[in-house]
Image 1 (cartoon, rainbow, N blue to C red):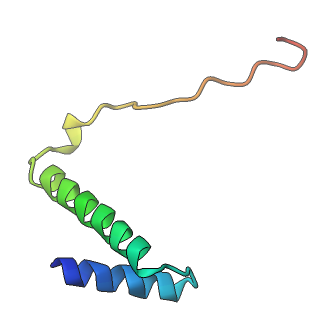
Image 2 (image 1 turned 90 degrees about the vertical axis):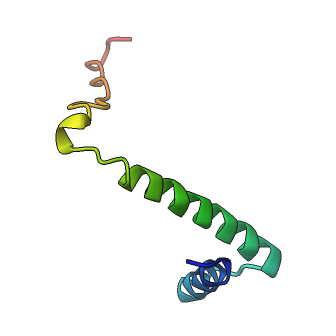
Length: 69
């Protein structure tokens, strides 16, 4: 997507959800979105397979039983 297309998307998405964005803020959001899309393209082109991802990335510890501090 071109910079103008990204900005148009940001403005349309903001309008769709009723989020007021001034021109400067919309431009900053568009810049972050374009950067994120570029990073996603790099990851997509890396050619990783399902087995390349760690089986378990995060598992929160269980809460301790009541009365135990």
